[in-house]
Image (cartoon, rainbow, N blue to C red; front, side, top):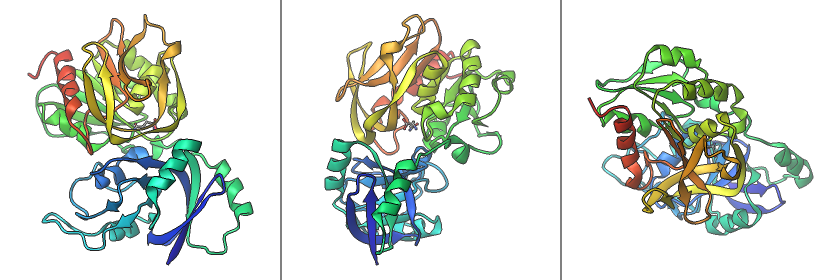
Length: 356
Ligand SMILES: NC(=O)CC[C@H](N)C(=O)O
C-alpha cells in the first residue's frame, strides 16, 4: 500500500506503508546511527517524534532483547528499506509486527538521506504519515504547524517507585523517561538503584538518604517540566552527589537560572564528538537531543561548561561550582552507540565515596 510523508513546508514524499494502519502527526527528526535501531525505537526520549533512519537497511536482525524500555515510543518510523527476512539467532520477530502490535505507523521506500538534507537545511519540521491518497495539503498543513510534543514526560515515566536488585551505594534514579541502560550501568558498578516517578517530591527522595541521585534522559521541551524543575532545585540544595543525563542535565541547568533553546535540527546518532574541557580529550558519544543549554547566560559561580560538541560548539555538559554535581547532554550509557564515556558512571561512583 502507498503511503505519504507530508512535511510542514509542503514537501510530499511517496513511499510504502509499514507498521500500523493509522495516520500520525509528529515532529520529524533524523538519526544517523548505523546500528542499534531497536535501542532508538525504544528510547522514551522519542515520544511525540517520528524518526528518520539515515542508515538504509533497517531491521536485519529483527526484534531482539536490546530494548531501552518495554515498548517503542516513536510516533512514526521512516526508513529506506525494512528487512523482510530478519536473520539472527536471538531474533524474536520482525519490526513490521512490532510496529503493528504497538500501533505505530511508518513509511518505507523513502530516500532518508535526501530527506535528512531537507531537515538539515530547513530545520526540524512537523510532518504527517498517511495512506490517504486524496490528502488535501490545505487541510493538513495548518494541523502540522500547530503540532507540539507538549508535556511528554508524564507519558513515559513510571507510575510508582520501585527498587532494583543490588547492594552497595544507594542511588535514587529520577525517571523522566529513563533508558534501561542507565540503571544497568549503575547496577553493574555495584549500586542499589531505586527508580522514582518524575513527579516525586524531592523530600520523599531525600528522606531515603540516597548516596547519590541520578536524573535521567526524557522527551520533549525541558521548559515543559516546570514542576519537576522545582523539585530538582531542592535536590540541588541537598548535599547529595548528582549526575544527570540529557533532559536531566537540561532541567538541572534550568533549575539554576540557565536557559535552554531548540537547535535547528538536533543531535541524534552514534558518532558525536564531545570534548572534555578539563583534559582536552575527545570522546565519541551517542546522542539524542533537540534542545541545548545556553551557556552564554550561565553564571560561573553556579556552573561551568565541562564538555563541548566538537562539531558545532554547543554545550555538552556542566560542572556545578562548589557542588558534587555534574551533568552531560550526551549518553554515557550508550545504547546504541560507543561506550567511550562510560567512565562518567565511575566518576559518579567515586563522588559517592567509592564502590562500597
Ligand atoms: N534524550 C533526551 O533526554 C532529550 C532531552 C530533550 N527532550 C531534547 O530533545 O533535547
